[in-house]
Image (cartoon, rainbow over all chains, first blue to last red; front, side, top):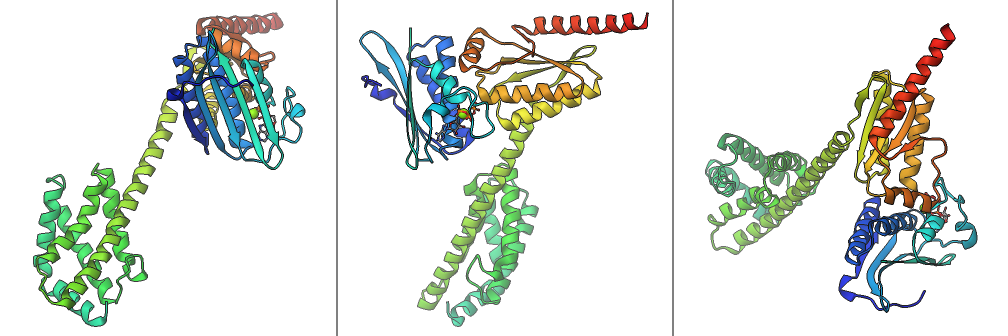
Length: 140
Length: 281
Ligand SMILES: Nc1ncnc2c1ncn2[C@@H]1O[C@H](COP(=O)(O)OP(=O)(O)OP(=O)(O)O)[C@@H](O)[C@H]1O
Ligand SMILES: [Mg+2]
């Protein structure tokens, strides 16, 4: 994903250690999405993606952090969100991104669904080191 | 504290018991601005005073040590009462700390006396902190009890029509809430002898895979009891997000509004009735 200039004043960081933190992260992302002028549909899509990725960070990553900031491109504004954990990592990223595949008891739609809900999506994972998912949603 | 010091302290506390308790009571009462009855306070403080004296006599100066078992249980009670009556943590701890003040006025100038006082004051510091911890624990219990109540309050299951119950969901749906919703809904189906349930999600800000999975489980459980569910209140942004995620509700009927869902349920009930009637003819 390209580096976009960020509105530093808007930057927020939320630790994810318990399920209440996922709710907090979701609220933070919603506020930034409103600040950036995302439509209600796009706000809901981004917040839902954040909910999925935040919960993965908690459940599979064993906790981590969410960082979110309003970014600008030439003529557009968006919200950038990064989920990072130092958990076990994902051995097969293609498999993890397959609709319906879960290693637990979920629907296996969180990761692949989140990718469809945002405009830019990047998954980095190294087994034994951790997982980082970065997403971006533009206002239009 | 060597035994001479603690003996002196004990002598002082025993000899002037009545006077010291009275002063202590006065100081504490002033800090609580008369929001606690003097009778109650008097009883509380004299019990505490005697327990502390006994623990000192047993040779203890460590507030968390075994000699202070009785003192600590009295403090637990005191802290819990203060927390429930709405006093602040400071007002709670002051009940203990102010005994220092009272003793201070009796202090002579000798090195031994000052040493004894200092050690006693460490002890009271520790006991004061103990009350703050207990206070916090009680508050936490109160808060979690309240959120449990809120949980139950915030999921009313209502009878909408003969044979139809409805549950409007509002706010974030986590596992605990969904569990409560599911139990209440199944119980209401049974109690009201209903065959249809409407789950309205107008008030749910986002439906992710976890919420969807909880909804699906509820529907399956209702089916096992012979009841059908309709999910209503699916707003445009939620519909688009659900589709984006790739969630399928299968053969579960979904409706935009509660009115649509009710109409659907009534039609189904009619159909079932006429089928039964046809069977009889
Ligand atoms: N941060 C992470 N660290 C390690 N493994 C992960 C992480 N995120 C996802 N995974 C793996 O990828 C799989 C797919 O994730 P996805 O979110 O799509 O499904 P799920 O969480 O199992 O179910 P749900 O549909 O409820 O989200 C997970 O089952 C898990 O094995
Ligand atoms: Mg997931």
